Length: 124
Image 1: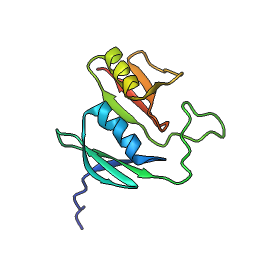
Image 2: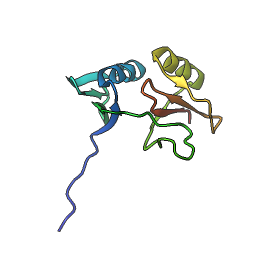
Image 3: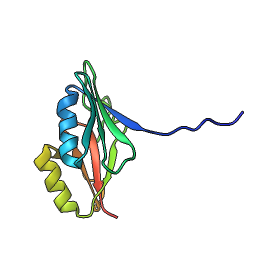
């Protein structure tokens, strides 16, 4: 039996308010809203590729970065390549992100989105 064709289309992030979190990423990335319902929002890049979706998660608890014993663990994070790290951090903060206290690398900045999901801004 042959393997079926599988295409990753969307990464989904849980949030207490999916519309608000989608708004943050729309401003951050310059993407467009492809679908919006009360508990579900999908963003797509004008360049195509994998999209981002946001869904309501009752009882949402943000991850802790870096997590310690007993802390809610980060299950995944977004890696966003940038051409100017300082300018990208400033833009992310203007959009509503917070710079994480712990920064493990010189060429990467870990930020937290308004719902507490870590994401990395990095330069090649």
